[in-house]
Amino acid sequence: MDNKKRILNIKIITLFPNFIENFVEGFGIVKRAIKLKLLKISSVDLRKFGLGQRQVVDGRPYGGGVGMVLRADVIKKAIELAQKIKNQKPKIKIRTILLTPQGKPFKQIDAVRLAKYDHLVFVCGRYEGFDERVRSFVDEEISIGDYVLMGGELPALVISEAVMRLRPGVLGKDESSVGESFSEAMLEYPQYTKPEILEIKDLKLKNKKIKVPKVLLTGHHKNIEEWRREEALKRTKKRRPELLN
Ligand SMILES: C[S@@+](CC[C@H](N)C(=O)[O-])C[C@H]1O[C@@H](n2cnc3c(N)ncnc32)[C@H](O)[C@@H]1O
Image: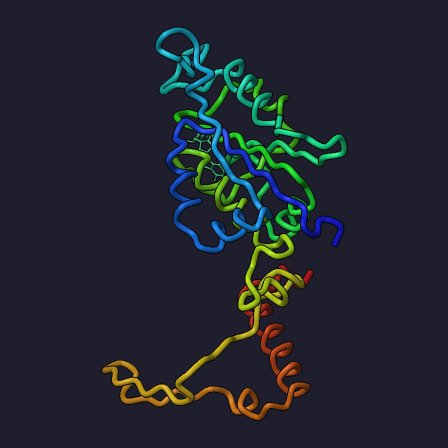
């Protein structure tokens, strides 16, 4: 992969920088990737670009309506700063993404695509959203699903996590993104660990023994591979048939 050993720089423009800091602090894998210089993730505090003494970042919508809308001029200044990084190399690949429920639905294929960039800038909306003109400052708009959240911070972190785990070296040797759900337009096969026989004492199930499928205990790699492929296919057909198209 051409991005081997290259650092992925993520900057998240937000009114709530704590959100991002807590995420970075909370996860061992993320901290390790930062230490190994595979990843940099930080927030850009939108409030700092606010106007006047009160650092105003929003305004009432023209034409009336409820709630407040983030100002385009304030966001523009934050984007300009977020796009700059220290000692920037000339050929750096940068992508600026606006989080909005009106954006393109996020898929694993987008994570793969975004993992090829060196620098990702996320713009998080809040309140009723942002001034329409913000759309002209970004490269793309992404939604994480057909529901409305209170802000773009969780979507930005969802996308960041899906992207960063695809970068070489970010996952330790015990984790892997190979063969996972969606990596081949299919869901993953069923996984089992100890105990080999699970005894369940449950009124509904009645005392039941649930066994690990025999093939997984044989050590026969070819048969196991085949079984996993068949199970993945069966599962995808049943749960997400549209993926197979
Ligand atoms: C309350 S929402 C505003 C929704 C806006 N009024 C609309 O109907 O499109 C505030 C912000 O949360 C973020 N957001 C909410 N739901 C989202 C989703 N499903 N995907 C991505 N971002 C979302 C966006 O940044 C949005 O600007």
